Each structure stands twice: as structure tokens, then as C-alpha cells.
Length: 98
Picture (tube, rainbow, N blue to C red):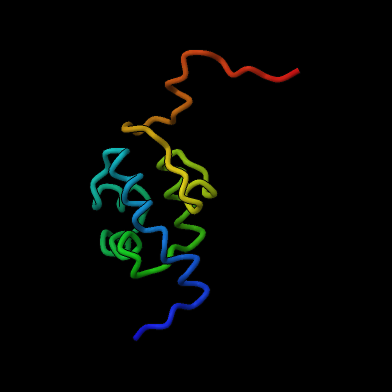
């Protein structure tokens, strides 16, 4: 039986979320791996929770998927199906509190 370390608890739980975000952005596995500069197998291992995600790769993934690293690693999902940031779809400017 495999014991779960603290690193695994923190880093091995993000794969399904990353896959979901990648698919919402209409990226295939190999295409997305190329875009973020890792191999298809490395990305597959991350998405299948067989390999923890490094902070460097988390930053690359978050940037390409237009989410913060915090959102990527904290289970909050961005509801979009395009590769453009959500802010590009806003019709109204942000209101700034006085």
C-alpha cells in the first residue's frame, strides 16, 4: 500500500482540475503540453495525479489557462470555453469603489 506524504497531499490532487480547465479552453493534451513546454507524458502524469506539479509548471499552466495559480490550486474554476481571458468578454468596465 502506498503512503501519502504531505507533498502528495498538496501536489497530487490538482490533476483533474487542470484537465477540466484545459478541456474548457479547448486544448488537446499534446497541444497544451507543447504550449507550456513540457512533454505530453509529463502533462498526462500531472493530470492523472501520478506526478506532483512544480510551482514553475503551475505558473505556466495558470498563465495559459488565464487563471491565477491560487485559483488553479484551490479548486475554483473559471467558467469559459475559449482561450481568451474572461475579462475580454466583459461588456461593462469595472466599477471602482470610491
